[in-house]
Length: 73
Image (cartoon, rainbow, N blue to C red):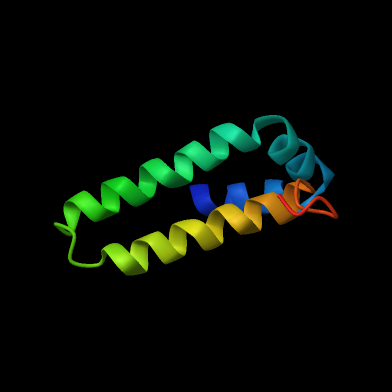
């Protein structure tokens, strides 16, 4: 089982939701950092696509952690 498979399995349960609630801001920063790194490595060629993916990832984290439920943020 690879690292990503282990992470996916951990995030599926209540433990993952709790983790996302406690460390959501750090996770958002990590998504931004990954997007910035990808953008640098592609020399800006896919900036719009990377930005779209980054925003969707952050939105999904927000929904998963419950930060977006009924608050609109």
